[in-house]
Length: 81
Image (cartoon, rainbow, N blue to C red; front, side, top):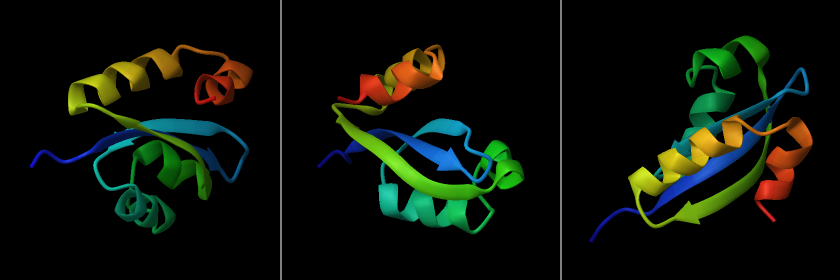
């Protein structure tokens, strides 16, 4: 059975957004919260997860991540709706 993949967006302590992919959202958020996730979130601080979207594959999640990162702040949250 293939693992489910997700694209997610979280809010950092300074109000900025971070977008990433994972196959285990809860585990990844715990890693970010502990300061051992991405360099960006480690430096900015983890506040909360904002949105997630289940994807059909890792490839699809990575493509969505790339597309989301190119959007404006407002468009990023709208993309998940």
